[in-house]
Amino acid sequence: MDNIELKYRTVWLSLGWLLVITIFYLSLIPYPPEIATFEYGDKLKHFIGYFCLMAWFSQLYRPAITRVVYMFGFIVMGILIEYLQSLTQSRTYEVYDMLANGLGVLGAFTVFTLYRGNLLQRLEQRLG
Image (cartoon, rainbow, N blue to C red; front, top):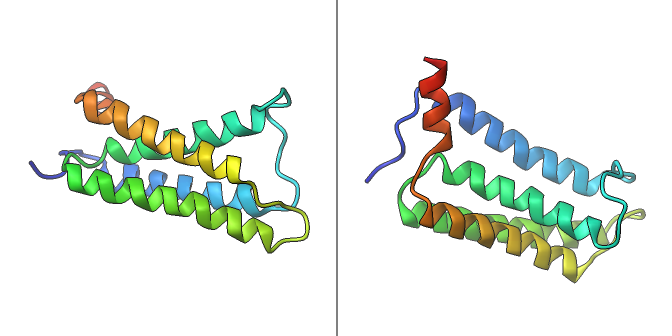
């Protein structure tokens, strides 16, 4: 089975890559916005961010091999960002951030592999 048929595929892909850029930006700026200020809130942000990233791209590709490639790519991205943070003056390298990133990716990969529905197709149907 090929890619999922989407009328606005270019828009959805552009939004997905904008999400990638946003994660890099928020991960590397000196003082990111504080959203979750409770204990382990930072790890929850990492998990949710990478979950959403993998979930988004899972909506665009049906073939398992393509999803696996994105899964490994996003895990590597999370590791790379942590190493890049270690090169800055204001950010720190954290193994638990890498773990939270990877768990988010794996969680979305699992959910969207088991759940064969497609939210973007449904949205397009509603849009007309």
